[in-house]
Length: 207
Length: 115
Image (cartoon, rainbow over all chains, first blue to last red; front, top):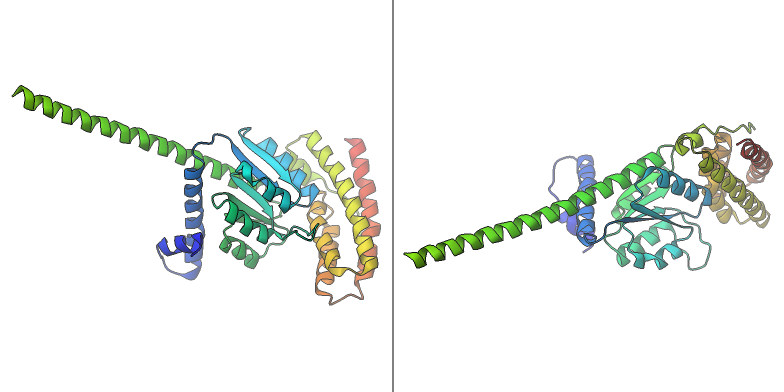
């Protein structure tokens, strides 16, 4: 059973098919970020890979995100999916992947095949798919294959992508902080219980 | 075909950063010149699938420089080459595209000089 199918099984149901789809998508996103936060709790800076064979769009995206995101978010660009896969040992937190990567070599695959490969190699990496076509079927296909989100290369793509990355990084930071706070609370509770036991023992001994 | 440019979207996303606009316009000239050449070669070879992919690939960059008619023409070329339904009209559309593209590149180069 795939990770998505397992999550879908856990998901609470709430009415119409459309509502369920939206709920499913939002539920998946929360679960993916939660899994990612657990996996990256030791890291401080975020690493984002941008993958597109259109040099103009790739450069535009790189310059825009460099200017508008925190310097703690590092960006790396790749013009082919093969290059991106080779760099997966750098553990990227987010990958922005073009849906229609052209086949420059006989071994090249399209964006969807790379998405599957990335999910196999690094299931906690969040993948945002980009496409020049605004197609609901393509969007659903990519989400079903495990993409975190889907964006068409429209006028609002840059701002929406910036917001997606900001939201992911903020949520991951919050999750990590929450995890740290929980650890501190657990330790504190442990010492309080220990102290109560000691006081009880001292009380018993003095009687 | 109208070959006018509108760089307002590019200036908007660059948030007033001239260097950003300059780098992107330079990339546009380099990338579009290469793809133009590629589309021409593919049309001679009648490799319609690769030509469709090439048209799809450079379509968004014309949107960025406000050449919306070119974006629409590339969309037509992409569909015609992919579906192979109107192959008789395709060479004429490619010819219009190649001619207009040269003029767009000249216009972009002028914008680069004026920056």
